[in-house]
Amino acid sequence: MTESYHRVVEARAVEDRAMLPFVVNGWPVLICKDEGKVHALINRCSHAAAELAPGGRVRRGAVMCPLHGARFKLDNGACLGGADYKPLKLYPWRESADGWIEVAVPDAAPGAEDMPVKQLI
Image (cartoon, helix red, strand yellow):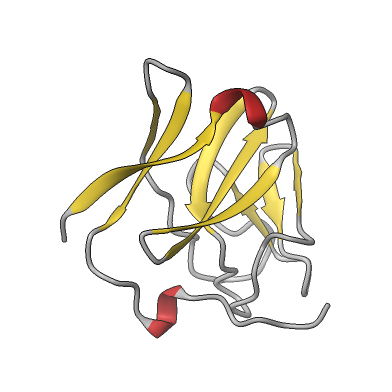
């Protein structure tokens, strides 16, 4: 599957502990920053398909789902704790010379298994 980079947000707009949700080429993308490091991941919990943002939290190298509290490592997407949930999809990203965060998402449209379920929290 081929991927292309897309301009998403100015790097200076991403504050520490930020959780900024975007739809990039149809894909649900979450830009996070923790301890000065930016991360790009799917905005969909692999446990209950809920959106991680809005409502979730970033802390100590992990993102927490607002629905059931599942926590996932930002550096590799793995679930923390005893649960055996599928790791979160991480997206490659880069900062452009003019200060924008660009995220690589698949060129093909996402399937239903990649989209979050809208839930009332």
